[in-house]
Image 1: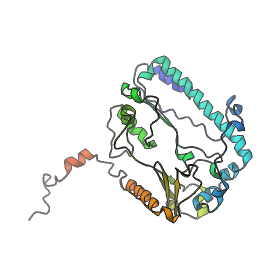
Image 2: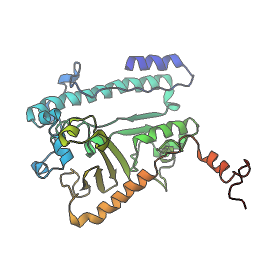
Image 3: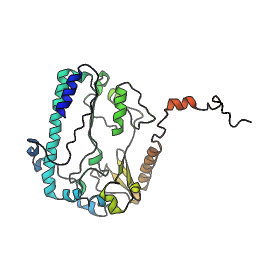
Image 4: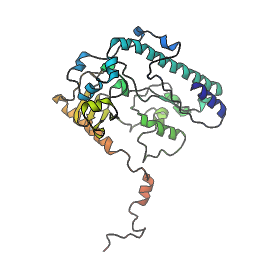
Length: 319
């Protein structure tokens, strides 16, 4: 894939181009080519983040996911010690392949005019929380890498910095459209361009939380819980301190990320945090109520047609 990407970039010359380079790895099957498969050993990998107290009074959704075959296997130390080094090798392979790509851009002088976004769709438990695969709402799954390279000179003051603002995968398309000087179609797109952050370093009206949602209708957990596909939904809202999870048909979850960064202590039923859960639930409700639904007509068209029925010859309400 990297070879084809380099070939494509080289053949474009000075003509504008766009490339979505989607590396499937790191991913199962957990097998890497030489030398990456044996590049790391178990003692060079982070140990799984998990605690025996998680298994006590576990939330029904989490307990069901722990019955999946991948979770049962990743709860075994020998699986963790075998797979994690290979997974780390797959990550190293991605680093090396991207290095080849960056060298090509440098050789062709394309760093000066190429917008680059590096991100992922999800993380991987690999034994964290006694789980395998990629779902549920733990930070290890939800908090993915997101690196933006903005070639515009206006971004020079923020270059190389880490921005603390919340960003989301839905911000990718608005950012690309903004960089190209194209309309962002705010009546359809949920995200926000990140260029104000890269070029000004701050935004007075930036989001204070992020939301993620899960449909587990295709997963065995749905069968274990006896849910219909339409009942198999969950939403997470997260700010700098709190993570609140709303499940259809089940109790909510709450985690204090300031005092419990590993997300071991579920405060979803703790009476002392009723107000916090209410606040986070209101945020989720506000987010759901503001999702874009008028997708066939933009705001400018709505404004131009507001209260114009009489001009169209429809004088209803007249006496």
